[in-house]
Image (tube, rainbow, N blue to C red; front, side):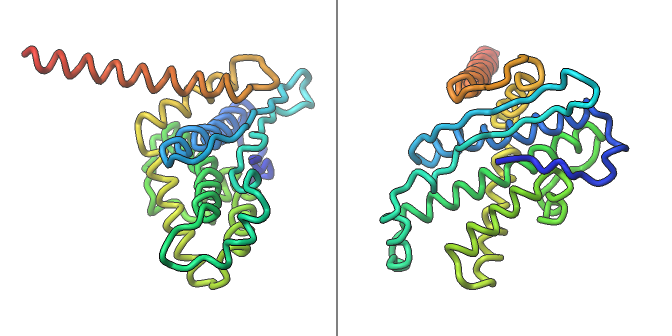
Length: 228
């Protein structure tokens, strides 16, 4: 999962702003891989975030989520058996590739939401189509999404329908305030930690701490309200 750095008019984007966009993009991927997969009761998968930080004026900031794909962790026999599945049940392979697609889409969506918040602009699902996501570092992510869909769904009509459905699920994920807090917390850590490799355990610790803090605050507000 890698942000595409060939953005339109890169000279018009402040370097630090591009760093922030990159951090939110990769934090979105990581949050979806851990939090959403767990919510869907899918098996945990290893990932890490590799970061290259500028040490000289000619070097650019770079971050990339490594691994984190469910489909790559399925046995070949399971993937090959997908074509024999009837409509009566959902194959484990389908659950895996759909989760991978959503996790890919969350990256550019997170970057788009960050930019919209910074610019005080409206951000909603109706504005987020594939062409729009390509402007938020999503070109390589979208290529991977199309590869998934073309491999597993033969009908173009069904591919387009499925993509629309999964894009909606990705949007719902980042539209959740709890999830957005997790993305923001990891993005700040990517920018500020100085680490060149952020381990899976480090990212999960950030997510779990963030989710626990929100749960605690919600409980405190409930107690305060009940005591009035």
